[in-house]
Image 1: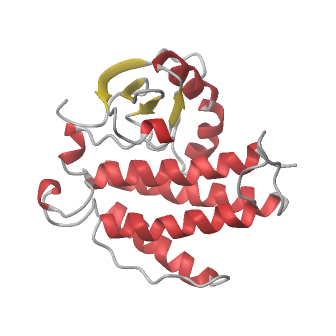
Image 2: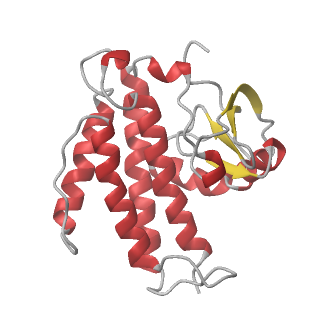
Amino acid sequence: MGGAVGTSGSVYIEAGAKRSFACSLEWPGLSRSGKDEAAALDALSGYVSRYAEVAGRAGLAFDVTEETSWVVVERVSTRSGGADFGVPTAILDGDQSDFGDQEAARTAALLVASWQTLDEVAAEAPSLLRKGPRGGGRDRDEIVAHVVGAEQMFAKKVDIKLPVPASGQVEVVRANRAALADWCRSGGGAAPAAARPGWPPRYAARRLIWHVLDHAWEIEDRRQ
């Protein structure tokens, strides 16, 4: 593919040995997994209404519905990658191209909306969440701390150094997120995407938004 952005129903499939991810090309963060391609596409449809709230919060017109016919435009096999561990890790050829100004602004709006979604969900959830079938799973504050900690890793992958916030340092978290949003609005920096260290900006933004929303939805699903 020449670029990573497609029409509303365009998706790519990242297939591992035991699980697959279906990921929207136009809507960063709209990515769900299943035991195979068909199951992943079904899961993606099942989260459309939840993602619509994020797009609306970002001020974007969202024209995908649960009845949308997904069009698989690319399939990537990552047999030793993250799909089997619940993480979309495929970097597409199209991810190496630069953000345009419009795409950068749109992606930044979705990134900010994903944080707002997480913050709202966490504020409404109890501190103790329902455990999994084997008694596992983080509670609310642990999930939020995990997301904040992961943002340090994401920043390093795009050559941004952020201070590590101590527990309760809300202002530091806000400043770090503002820096990441500004990075996204800038299109990832002045250098060509292929010449930048770490992750390409389009992939980095897509994975960051997915990570925030994945845990926001986890909190929603595990509320007591």
